[in-house]
Length: 484
Ligand SMILES: *Cc1c(COP(=O)(O)O)cnc(C)c1O
Image (cartoon, rainbow, N blue to C red; front, side, top):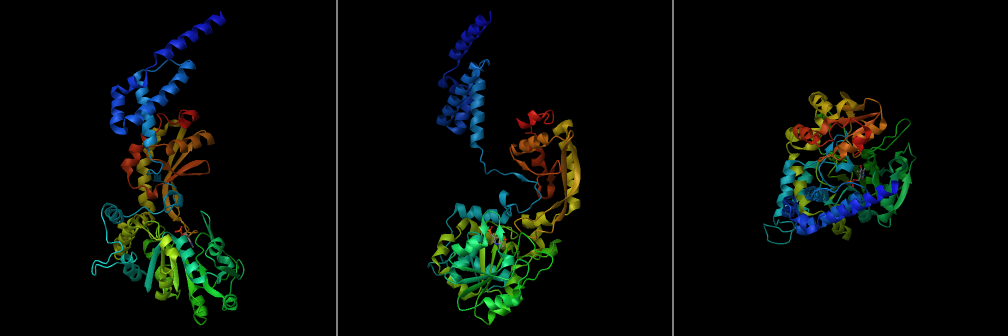
């Protein structure tokens, strides 16, 4: 009896397999014709072939064969998924405004328009329209950067890491680069100051100790072999307690008499006075230049709020030396970024409207009250979507600037805390995963058994809510649902 049943099932299976349509038949369906119009015949035929192969395995395992329409629809899902970029937009609700892994600064509309224009049209990138002769790509930004920083001259490269590498290679190759032991930083993503120095061909000369470096430590180390004295803004940590660092102004006085350039790597280096936006003080580039640094380097996509770039500003003769280095050509930026940078920098000419126009400043200066009001509106909309398995509540939380700016100062913010009612860690993981799979992924942070969605960077409320419809129905019913 047992034996007969399984033979019967085999016969049925064979018949089902024989009845499965051919690729060409599926391609005739209305659904497949729609897909062909979008993705092209070749891609659709391939997706149908892969779907049929999967269906064949399912039928062998005992499932009843799906209709031709369903096969075409499944192929369409494969095509949709493959067409979706992994670099697609997401909601950054991590509470870190300048999140390196999430692309740092979101650009201002003016910068986006300028970049699009530069992509669409030919531009006078290295062409002097007045004389009809060859121009320099740095010319478009030089005057503006000097105006905003008080520096004599400026040049722009791929990012701040490139700026530091280029400066050291230009001014200290085969020579000593003196730096305090308290400032030998590592920034995420394998930027370690000692490694950069080695690659730049400079000899690292460490002075002082981890917690204390004195003026005489620098003075004693400077000799004929010295290429530069480097000061590094310890942007992502603070040494506290029994400490001593030599302020840039004091260091400038020490190096001046010895004819050695002082380089100050600011990292984030803001162009605006952050206190005017209710934030803690972060050294401005103008201050660093005024303190007497011969060269100052800083990022384009940190507090400045523009595209990825590295700025090198300072003494004209040193900038000329840097521009003569063949490495400058290797590290230069393209027309798209130059256009976006110029438009971003122009916004700084009107500080009163900066918080309105520059997303980075707009996010950072948003008040906790405004964010709390948003959270209060969203909580009742989110709760039914998640069902009884989760509790959604409005909370006060702390945002961070990110990208190493003001590492210890947080900004009062608000958001939503989503807690599994049964305290299940698996259910929480499932929820985070489901939010990441949404058409516009939602990225929060898990803290003490809850998923925290800091709403500081959420501006499009409408889009956020519509997007949540993409969550599996009754998300909270079981952990398995959440994982699917
Ligand atoms: C961030 C940072 C860098 C590297 O800048 P990128 O723009 O990320 O290349 C270098 N130095 C300091 C002090 C920094 O904070």
